[in-house]
Length: 257
Image (cartoon, rainbow, N blue to C red; front, side, top):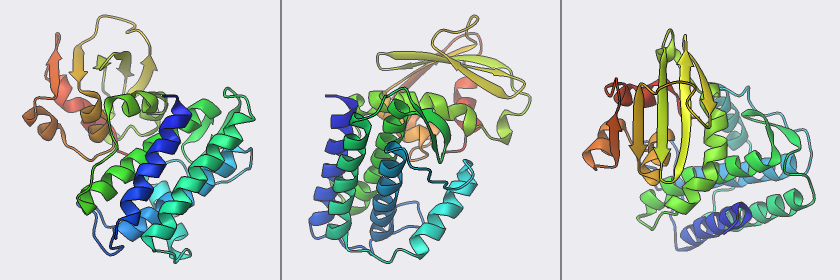
């Protein structure tokens, strides 16, 4: 499977969930949105991403979690469509539009996105992350099968790595530590210097804390769908190193976008 296949497959699986007699008024667990609102958001975001992928300038929010939330609310307020089947088809179509637009452009060409500048390959990773996160919410709300698995998560890591320094929160102020993350077969380091994180392939020094975590658990934790205690209770993470207690602090240093 390629990253492009992953985008289309995920969008199609969301569309199937929304076609199966879904009630748009069903609330999403732990969120303010309903299924209809989440689906509308995915349809709008799919159009936004496809336009950006095609080279259009589409400013959206200010790149912060709070700014993106405000932009989402404003967009939903002027987009009344809430029919799940209609929105499911829109989500699937926009995913194909994105893949088609990306096919005609260099994957390393920089574009400006709601999360700041990135190349088109990382934009695809961003779109997949977005689809998987909200698709998971819709699946849980409708008691259907979700589409987050180890292979899909691997394709989201380029965006996750890029986004980490952009979503660090006030809990990181003054923090100094080096973390090595082992997510399935993937490895990378996150090193904090006075609260500022730098993400690298290899740790610049001996890690203070190594976190080996199941890929699906990492994804759901990173997007705020699971908490650190939930991950630990399900035995999805192992932590070791000179300062293993930092493993519990690590997810608290970021605010999910």
